[in-house]
Image (tube, rainbow, N blue to C red; front, side, top):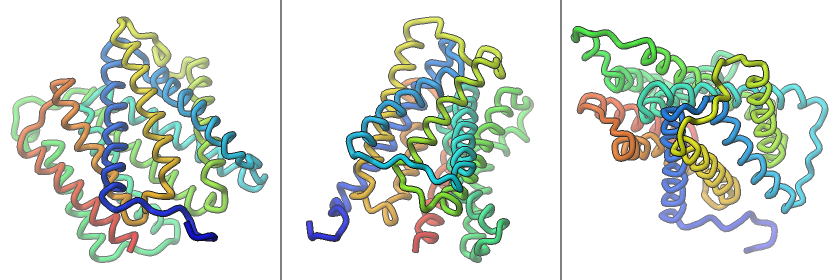
Length: 306
């Protein structure tokens, strides 16, 4: 490697393949979460296990790199806000996964680039281009199909309360994550990534423990009723920790400005895993809608990067 230059990027096919693998690992984490919740585990317990495992692994990486952990006083409040936003995002996403099919929850959560663009515009950033506005409109059309709203409107039965709650929670997850991205880019950009990540995971872990101790969500810290639930908790912790740390370590070599949209493969992976493991299936209209949403999000991400 030439002195003064960053790490050598991986070949494009290896970088893309690595990101698809990481996306599949993250999808497995969410499928395992659904198995844990179906076996009696509380949502807060799931997020706590995930955050705790990631905190241990990330602490080891930061110590191994001898990273300076000093946090400037002027950034302290923004770092706390970022941690709380990610805590809310994690809670909402896991709560959505517990109520609706995993792939649908992740698809709705993947709307965060659209919401991030809108938040940036509202808070004084650049206005979305005409092309971006058209893509956003198509995303809404695709989401309508993915939710099978035409079928629901023409059918005789209305969606249950858990279905509605799951949709709203998934959208809340996207909103909180978009807000977290705005804080990261506009208030914490000067903070080194390892420091920001470690403090964020630490705040998420503490927030979940505090919420459980205060019994904010009754049954949120409930233990699984069967061995399958405990095994699923172990799998979700291992998968999230593995995916997070692999992405963290390899990110300098993955050419993220060019390849980041590949991470949108997570809903696709969850669709396949949800069908194989959870027997969660979608009709053709929903699949077409999901394809429209993901395609437009990828195009929007590439357009923004350029």
